[in-house]
Image (cartoon, rainbow, N blue to C red; front, side, top):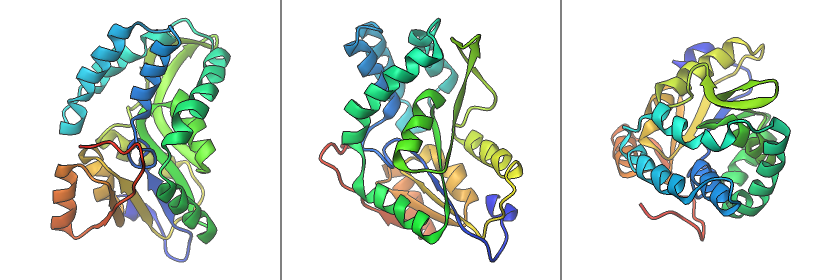
Length: 233
């Protein structure tokens, strides 16, 4: 349990999921569509990605299979070139999708002196710059393998997905010198149930039906953040 690693009389740690929690969309899906728009990926990849993502909401997506398919457009690409493309992507696709309530919650934590970290099952080339833009102090995401500054299309380390988020958070805490009073956790998805169970202040944000039912049974706080682009479940 993450609360076992924290101490009293210290700042709180605020852990946020990214997709459909802080933004009213899935950043990985938006990225795939963006690559198709830029003619970097074929339209067939978008259709395949959407088919695989349908399993995500049920909590039974094969993440490694998903990554093998969706990371193909990065293979052979230079890190710097992708960073430049991601910057355009964030301006065009991510900023318009931000939940203002989510941004306000991040700012609320920061004004209290809390440490804000985004933990996502999306790849780091997207999550880290998005987290920086949102004002988070740090980010944990799926790590990508590179060779001589070139993406190989492979991942490395523990995937920050489902129980993997808890594993990665524990590793992050072990490498961090700061001691925390407690942990807040925010997510929309049943896939993040292990993480929400591991914090001492869990919040279900616009939860999917399964998470909503669990949150109600556990008497967790349910937060309703609205956006014009809100995804209908």
